[in-house]
Amino acid sequence: MLDLKNLSSEINLKIQQVKDRETLESLKTLYLGKKGIITEAFKSMGKIDADNRKNFASELNIIKSNLLDQINSYQSKIELKEIEEKLNSEEIDITLPTKEIKKGKIHPVSQVIDELTCIFAEIGFSVAEGPDIENEFNNFTALNTPEHHPARDMHDTFYLDENKKTLLRTHTSPVQIRTMLNNKPPIKIIAPGRTYRCDSDMTHTPMFHQLEGLHIDKDINMGHLKGCLDFFLKKFFEDENLEMRFRPSHFPFTEPSVEVDISYKLENNKIVVGKGDRWLEVLGCGMVHPNVLKNVKIDPKKFQGYAFGVGIDRLAMLKYGITDLRSFFEGDLRWSNHYGFDANDVPTNYRGLSK
Ligand code: PHE
Image (cartoon, rainbow, N blue to C red; front, side):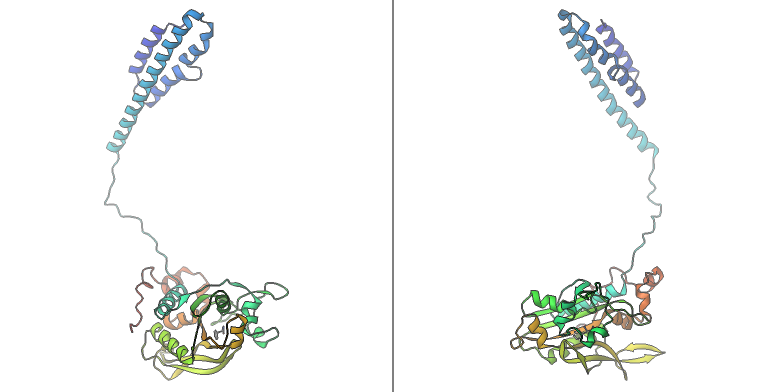
């Protein structure tokens, strides 16, 4: 039978020799490990006669819990000592220069969308959105462009199925339909977003951006349309003298339809928007066709409205002097650093003309 008195004094001796984590760990294994002395002693208790067994067990338990207490207090002392040593040996040099943080740039398209959102918010337009993948009803039929209408071919549509039912939207006008189907007039929204047509050269890319505008209410007329566009164009190009002209045109979903030109001049072969003797087409618009209103269950006798669609990329090119549209979507960091904007530039502190 193990001599517990001996064991106890042996443990006390060994404890005093503990210096660091390693010696503490080996002490732990020696007595309390799987094959440790105390563990084994518990296992062999069955061999002790019943009279002595109880005493033996309670004494052994006392020794074990004492040992555990000692081990725990040594452990915290050792940890404290380690932290102190670390603090004494390590130094932080707060004068060292920090690593350079690389900041990204805001793409001109995002910038222009933010500017436009701010401008139109001032005159009561909220933002609506629709999906890039559309059905032919929203993109064409509801917009008074039935099947076999020549305008469908003119759009160079990317169809997504053989039956030509699903497509990549060719303009943001389907958002007009979605908004009118889901809301009752008065409606006053802009809808910026990606649009797609099978086309590519200096001024066309297969994916481009448009901003749609729609205002439906009682007694809305061409004068409201003109006032709205005049406000937006002057504010966007930051030029009170900017002139605008309406040119008759045709869109199936507006009647009458017009295209809008703005004045500009050439300086050193560069386009400068503002007062000038030349005209540049920037957008299409008109009064919403009664058939369109009927298609979305709005009574054209009660409500009228105007709609417009403007190319966002084109606005960005004109305002910020970017000549090749394709470069917008190449993802070249040098281009982004040159033409991009700092995150804190606009829109919250948009510096358009105050009126
Ligand atoms: N959706 C037309 C286009 O892409 C523009 C437009 C919008 C014209 C709204 C009139 C009214 O060319």
